[in-house]
Each structure stands twice: as C-alpha cells, then as structure tokens.
View (spheres, rainbow, N blue to C red):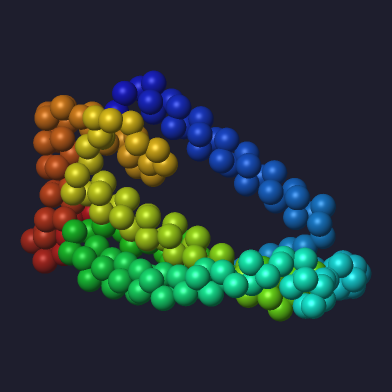
Length: 201
C-alpha cells in the first residue's frame, strides 16, 4: 500500500478514536452509563424524561394521515432484513472458517437499546427498534461482504464509487497485476491447512 494512503488511513483511525472519546464525555453530560451493553440513567433523569414523552394521540395527530398510511411499507421491510441477517450469518458460519477469515461479531453492529428511553412513547420505541435493527443488519452484512471481497478480489475499481468500506483502500490498484498476485498468494497461504490439518495463522 502507498505510504501516503496508509498515512491518511492512520489519521482517519485517530480521528475515529477521538470521536469515541468525545462520545464518552457526552455520556457524562447526559448522566448515563453503559454496563454490559445495558444503559442506566440516574433516577432524576428518568423522571425528567417521562415528562417529555408525547402521548399516542398527540403523536399520531402531529405526524399526519399520509405518514400513517405509508408506514406499513416501511415495516414490511423487516422481512428481507431478517432474511439478510440469517443468510449472511449462515454464510460466514459455513464459509469463513474454511478460508480462515475472522468472523464478524454480530453484536458489535446491531444495538437494540433506544426502547429504554423514557421520553419515547410506544410507537417511537418501535420505530427506533426497527431503525436500529435495520441499520445494524446492513452494517453487519456489509462487513461480512467486505471481508469476503478483501479475500477474493482485493482490487480497486477503475471508476470512483461512493461509500466504500475501509478495507477497500488497502486493495491493489486497478491494473496492478503484481500487487493482486501478491495479495492472492498471501490469502491462500493463510487458508492452507498445516501439517496438523488446521489453516495457517
């Protein structure tokens, strides 16, 4: 990988860590803590949150009839999302061990915690649970696809594409046959069984 590209990637990782540190400070501001992925608020904050909750009737009145009528189209997307969740989980469970590709921890991508917020009514909690699951599944599946692509075809595209995963920038350049062959040999060596019958690390 080009040294200038590596330098930029390192800077991005540093900024991401800085962002995580800032978010941790925000937790103190809003007086909540996270223990084993469970969010805990102080009792006084919970009381204030409950006073901010919008009633169901008021909520439905505010969003309007059109939003209510199209909501089933949104919620029906849960079917392909669940299928994608199951399919990608099964894919990495069966395929990744064969090629010594590290499995993607599902829990690192799918967070279902917004329904604990006392200032959300039942409909808002359902909406937040749906969005958390949907975006989590898509991010989880994207990481599985990214690791698969990094193993089988670590080559950049000739044309610019938006929203590429981080591994993409470590791929060999389009037209760099030597770089591709080097990456391919490296991946094959990692997945080749050793004398003890297990893939090399």
